Image 1 (cartoon, rainbow, N blue to C red):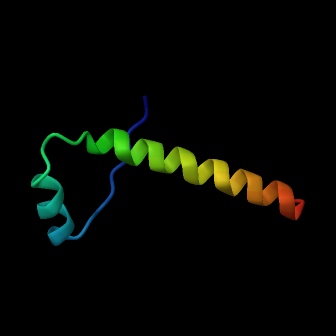
Image 2 (cartoon, rainbow, N blue to C red; image 1 turned 120 degrees about the vertical axis):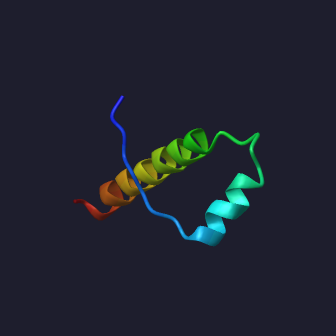
Length: 48
């Protein structure tokens, strides 16, 4: 599986670290999947 690297603000990282039971990679992957699907639907509506 390909990997990506992203930067986040220090304060966000601290808040994420306060929730060690959360699988952040999974959360981000699901969010990206949802965004891609929304954009695909939008492009279909716009006739791209």
